[in-house]
Amino acid sequence: MYSETVMDHFTNPRNVGEMEDADAVAEVGSLACGDTTKIFLRIKDNIIEDVKFKTFGCGAAIASSSMATELVKGKSLEEAAKISTQDVVEALGGLPTQKVHCSVMALDALRKAIEEYNSN
Ligand code: FES
Image (tube, rainbow, N blue to C red; front, side, top):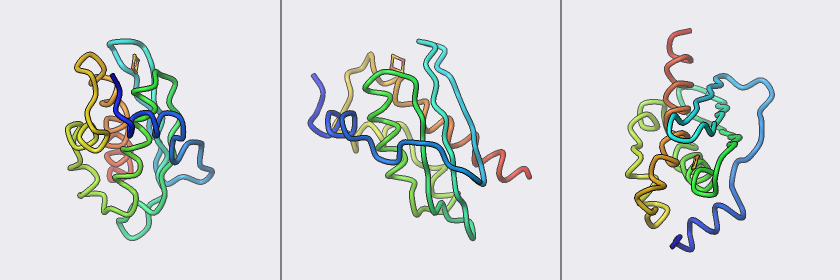
């Protein structure tokens, strides 16, 4: 049902945790299931130097958050904001249709964090 990449990022998620002195933080919840994801960003010269996440959610949400953080690390804020759910799902080798909503939270949190950073 799940790809090897999904299982790898679920059992060994990258960039899990919190960040002290983050430059931007945002949390979002899924209306579909009530789970949440929080993203922490360290930004320097418009580049995401480091990123951490905490996801209270299912395995697909944890794997998606892990992959999303890997995809945005080292990118400019503009490049990171352009990464789509489809990019995350493709990088994971696919997700069952009913789990795609789980992959949306990390990017929503990321975009919210970038928006708040840009508005300061
Ligand atoms: Fe809630 Fe997957 S079921 S994030």
